[in-house]
Image (cartoon, rainbow, N blue to C red; front, side, top):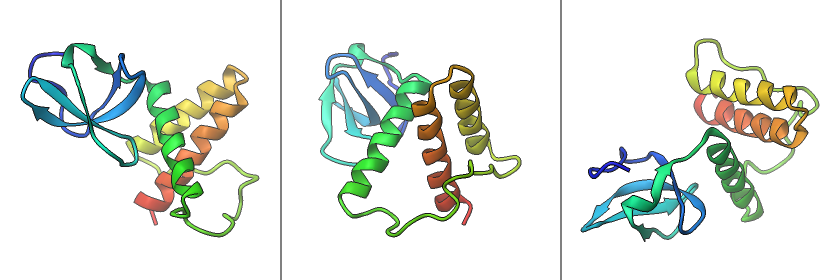
Length: 130
């Protein structure tokens, strides 16, 4: 990574810890990261960081959503219409990116990644487009 580091909130891959983290800032010579979805921060050498790939960001987001649900912090109760794929909001960049991830997963016949993209799209819709 460059010496000044990524922007606060950017998702980066820590090649030593082998995990995606959210960049929080710098503390001396170290980059401060925290798990996607919250948790205890850790220090990383900026030279060991790289931008997270779309697949790594997707996986980290799904893992965080699953952790929240297991911890009882999810929406609570069944979500109607799970048999149909969620519909994106027109002109929303985040929706468009998740739809692209879903389409690419479907083209690869990767049903797990397709489902992950649907889960993240539903969460995005409920959080950002109530």
